[in-house]
Image 1 (cartoon, helix red, strand yellow):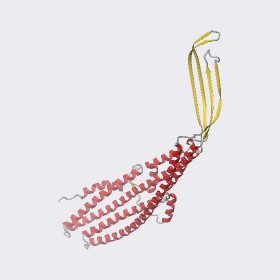
Image 2: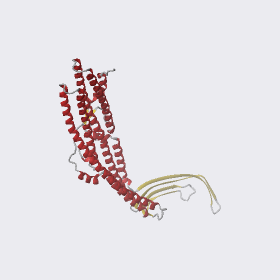
Image 3: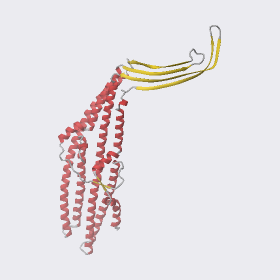
Image 4: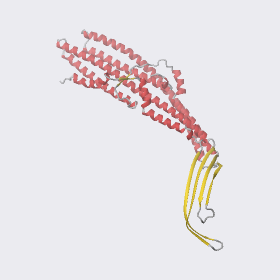
Length: 441
């Protein structure tokens, strides 16, 4: 039978866990949030979209400002001219040169366009507010993703600690089994069983250590790969036990970001209808210009040179009496879009209320499960301590001791899982109620 060398088996664990013990900085929740807000790619894209929306709502994009244009031109001619007068005389001119120069500055301004410009400007401002809500939505989703990965690192870190403690216990048991076998107090079977348990504990620790490394990579990805050093996370979890369901439900109705976005889309759809209806009305425009002209005529002309400049201005009324039904079609479709937005709001309202109720019940259940697991830890620890005492004085078998050890490890791992599951459930409730960005982590 082949026997595993325990030292060679544990060597990879030392490599995996070396950075978990030495030279690591603590990455707090607040630090993780600050890094995510600065470096997360999704948030950066959302902020860029917000900047575009801000540009769109500027007065420069409103249509309220006039347009000013400048034009200039020049023309050169070389002509051959033959002129016959009434008295019969003939005059011929070869290679006669002439030139013309002109320049003008034109101004156009819309005085009235059926209020379309006003409604469109208001719509652009609403779209900016919608972009602000989209940034908020992106931040909330990113924070949930951040804490999901952050708490996974914390859970795996605690699991690694529990597995290390369990492995140390197994090593002590092997030493005791070898001592008992050496002095004839136990059979070789006890030693072999202890070695098998050490091997199993070592494999579990190796897998957990690798899971911890992977989880840290996932966390760094959410942070935009901003961390270039080894780090640990804070495993402290504080529950907001003062949360009130009815209060959160009311806040959900008023502050849920999805509902706020739908309300903003309703306002935009209403303004779109008004903007399209503006095409039924006439437009009144003001135009003005300043022009300059200079002519250098050829010798055959009556005037050798002429120069003129001056101002001109006027009003233009334009009324599109029939556009082939295009405006009517736009108005009809805009009204349908508004109706769809109203239906979507009702559907979203029902969906969010359902999600909130499910999330609240899930949160309550997971907090209760965590409390039970905490109590279970005490029971498992007492059971292990009593079994260990009996094992040392020979009143408990190695199998009974191993079972108590496994029960304690299982209880610790389940408690870790329950703790972070409950906290994530709490964060989900806060997001649905619109309060995720209003609490301290």
